[in-house]
Length: 60
Image 1 (tube, rainbow, N blue to C red):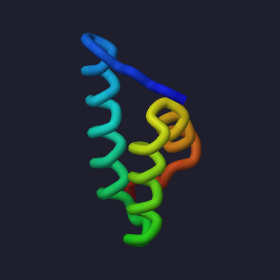
Image 2: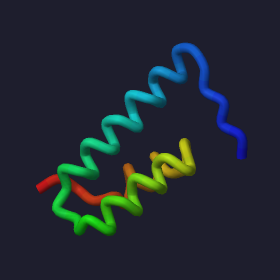
Image 3: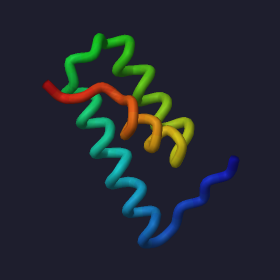
Image 4: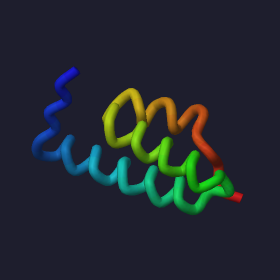
């Protein structure tokens, strides 16, 4: 899958990834799970964000 984000959609995607990373780091998950979630979001741009939004660790 080649996700090429440019312009406005690139900025939206970057903002979502940063928001997801901050949310993951602030969650109560273990350090290993945080690393796995962040890798998932970074390696699979669209699908990773969707999976994180549905099943990712929540802030406490």
